[in-house]
Image (tube, rainbow, N blue to C red):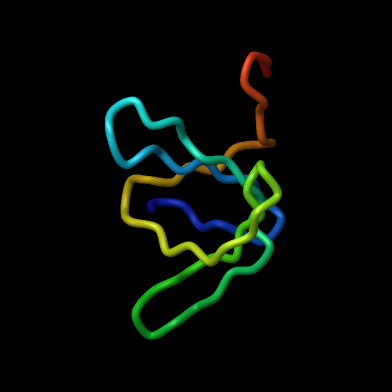
Length: 71
């Protein structure tokens, strides 16, 4: 990841396989570890999880978009 993600920002995580839709969510907490950074994220479906990104898989967006909407 090339940019610093901060609490409160929205992220989009690209799918792992072809055709898999990206996941979108809001960063609730940024956790620094000896082995890297992880995030507690509330995903668009309301589920919360801890996520440790792989380089190039996450981008920061202004807000979460819903399918079928435009920004």
